[in-house]
Image (cartoon, rainbow over all chains, first blue to last red; front, top):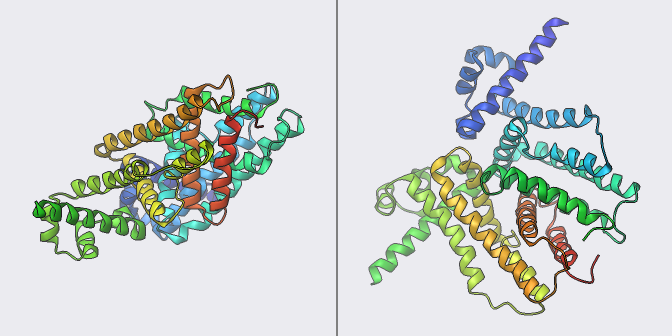
Length: 199
Length: 199
C-alpha cells in the first residue's frame, strides 16, 4: 500500500516541521499557517492530514515519545551492566542534537499541559512510560545483585526519574553552566551510589 | 515617600495579576490588555507602570525569585539539622498553593527562555542563586560533620539541584501520581543517603 506509506511519511514530515517551529519560535508561533510554510505545503494540503491544530500538536508530541521508544527498543546494549544502564538512561537525556530537539519540544509541550486539559492524558501516559523504563533499569540492577542492601526501590525509581528530568531541564536551559560532561558525571555518580562497594 | 510605596505596591499587584493570567491561561494569553483587566486597571494605567510587555514579564518573574529569597531569609529554621535542611529545600518545591503558583509561573517562563534570548540573563541568575542556596545546604551538612566520607560535594550540589527541580516539575505536572507525600519522602530519603549511618 504505497499510498498509505506516503500518507504516514507526510504526517511525520509535518510533525517534524512542527518541532522546528516550536524549537525556533515557541509553541505560540506554531500556527497551522507557519507549520505548513515550514513543511513546504499549502495550508489546504496540511489540512488534508490534520484537520485541527490540536490534532497536529498531539501527533507531533506522540512522535517524540514514539522516537524515544523506538530507539530504546532497537538498541543492542553492550558492555558492563553499568554501561548498559547509563546508555539506556541517556536515551532520556539531551545528549545530542536529535534528543535535544525532542526534549525541548517535550518541555515546551509540558508547560502547555498546565493550562490545557486536553493535553494531560498524553503527558500522563508518557510520564508512566518513562517511569516504567526507569523501573526496568532499577530492577535490572537489582536482579544482577548489584544494588546496595536496604534501598527502597520505589523511592529509588521516583528519585531517578526526578533526577533525570531535572538534569535534562538544566542542560537544556543552561548548557554552558550545567554542561554535557556534568550531566553524564552526575548520572554515573548517581548510579554508582546505588551500587554495592561505592560511597 | 508614600507615593513611591504606592507605586511599588501597584507594580506588585500588576505582577500578581500577570501570574494569575499565566497560571490560568498560559503565557501566550498574557497580553497587556488581559493583565490590565485582571488587575482591574485600564491599559493606559498599566502602561504608566510598565511601558512594554517585556518589562512587565521580566518584573513578574523577578518577583517570583524575590519572594523565594525573602521567605528563605525571613525564616527562623528550627529543629535538627536534617529538619532545617529539609525545610529550607522545601522553599524550592511546590509544597503549598503559594509556592505552586510561583513555580508554575517560573516553569512556563523557563520554557519561554528557550526561544527568547532576552529572558536568558534572568533565568541564568536565578539558576545560580538556587545553585548557591543548595551549595549552602550541602556545606552546612559538611560543616556539621554529618556527610558521609568521600562524597564529591560539587557533584552532590548538581545532583541535589537537578533532583529538586525534577521533583518540582513532576509534582506540578502530575500531582495525583507524584504526590506531595512522595515528593517529601524522596527528598528526606535523598538527604539521608548523603549522611553518615544511613544506607
